[in-house]
Image (cartoon, rainbow, N blue to C red; front, side, top):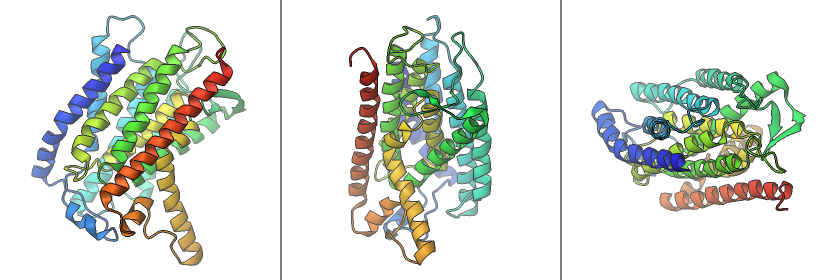
Length: 360
């Protein structure tokens, strides 16, 4: 538990103190955000705000994870694990894809960066690489970071995807989640605050799995995840990094995370869901991101079918802005939705444990 707290505090401090330094650096280099021309008129004042702040979140997460391990290096069996390192690699890889997208926007002075094909290609390389790696690195108990079975709140052998099916499924989850966070990142602090809540839920989930791991004691309701404690540590570092960044990203934002941050964070959610065997539970925990994505799908699909729009603008947070809601009102109310989704997801997770454990 101490290492988890160290990771969270280190991620928080590095992000909190490092972000203003990055703001100054990016301002000096002219790394300013371009704004959608068809977006709310109130967003015009945000043009030129430094972007690519996701680099701070990624760096703070890596440092938080590393420092926590350095301080517990003498504890046997507590070194870096395959599960956490694979998720961290996925975070960095997708961060690089997002960085390329952001830098193209800056240099070409437009709101569109990488082409859709190029972005999906980058996500394909990162997603498939992660999925293949997650089926390797079998430990002494015969567990690999990921399972080829479909999971909700735990691994269920009833629905086996097979190796190829799992790789395809993992790619879809990683791509969908990273793009969902990207779509949500449209208001000051909206994606950052919501992401911090989801990371907090994975601290709870992974630490609970560690306390009730089948490798510790084979009891009803135990979990077969390979490295839950290390995943909890990584989630804590990412949570702290998001909270530290939120201090500067909250309205009025001094810096935006950009695609560098949103793609990295979304991919990290997916990676954590896969290695904790809670893939379908992520749909509940990330309920806000699901709503934002569905609003875009509905808007596009309905417009192509009828030539009319369901919302004033998609993603849906812009719909409420154009309906007259103040930006801060939209942000806080969407944070509430994100918090309720996380609470409901954790409730489902714990309820399932109670139904299968000796406490039931």
